Length: 224
Image 1 (cartoon, rainbow, N blue to C red):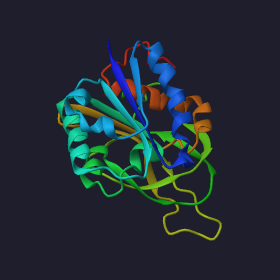
Image 2: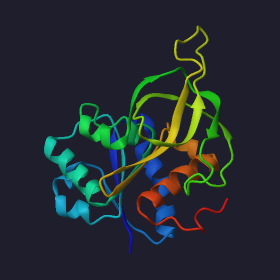
Image 3: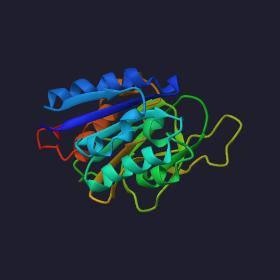
Image 4: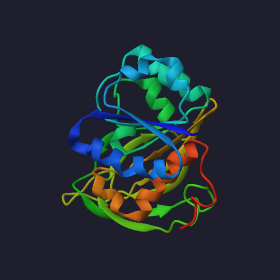
């Protein structure tokens, strides 16, 4: 049986527990054994981490010890998947450079308030994004530093603030994948609040990303 660990905590601004409860039942329906941790002590057990199929961090901010970071990176390097959304994965552990390298991106600034914008699917052939159309969503746009080696599946155009913004018009990755050793990494920058996942396209990009990272994405899961 595939197994998943949801690691939630950190800042409450991104509703970590509510967001976890969006995706945990979907993984259970897919046949996963689901476990939860609301603290980082689980990262101290290297052998236990290696036994999961996928780890889903939902932990904005916070800090991680060098041992915890090493154990997490070791698990992914050994073949455990890691996947997540928004600040829960891409604004976690801000001083942990090796963690950020593994994820392939890091939040560096907000480009304005909650704004309507369009998400463009850049790769229509990848199992995560196949069949999903471009879509509109009203949420926060993350401005990020991203690794040029990422495989970008979706992007968006940064919207200008009312007073103008030097990054307006930037094409910013929204969904990407990469590998870390034998492990798969999937990251989606959407997910400021749990309500973002009322938009089925956004929810499916994250759901499929988790399944892909766990090597459990089937043709049935890809149907739109």
